[in-house]
Length: 239
Image 1 (cartoon, rainbow, N blue to C red):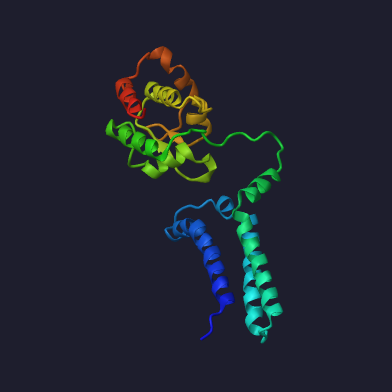
Image 2: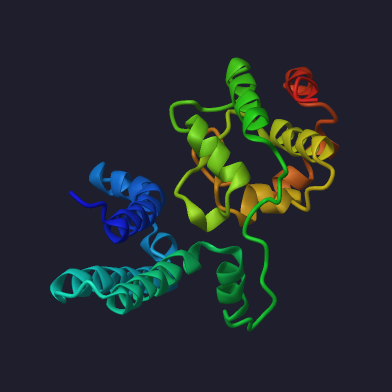
């Protein structure tokens, strides 16, 4: 049995491309199978799907033509392989940073784009530690807020998930939580209104939204909240 280099190389190409597809969209497929809510218009990325579809179509066409044309001439083999490489290039192009930046630059600007995240430079480890320390002092509703919810809200864009944070803190404690958080991450551009009001992702212990004026004036009514020591220990532990 002779070794078919064309078949070997094209098989590796298909494994790589389909592997990228599965690794990227597997999480979304799993969420769909588990009946979880999915933000389809964000996850699907239609320009990427378009290029992937074209590229895979050309790759399959090249393989089909290679084995449907009964010829062992080097020219036919070379043309088939070049067509396959063209399809492979189209398939990997959407995964490059250059392609991603190009697509983002073509979006209509209209009004200046506002940040839709907290720009919080917190690591996965620190977010996990913060979550469990808040639970330790019963400052977080763990029944309504999972670790994944907590990390999604702090780290990801606001519209890239369906997670929420439910605190077990009154107004003064919530304000102090924000102050400790902003002191721990001074490069963060988030303000208190972003965290508790604009994002729409953070809720009070009773499940209701925060009142910004109540938070803003909490310090004048209560210089130190009842959870001041606990919050201080929690954020000292992050440093």
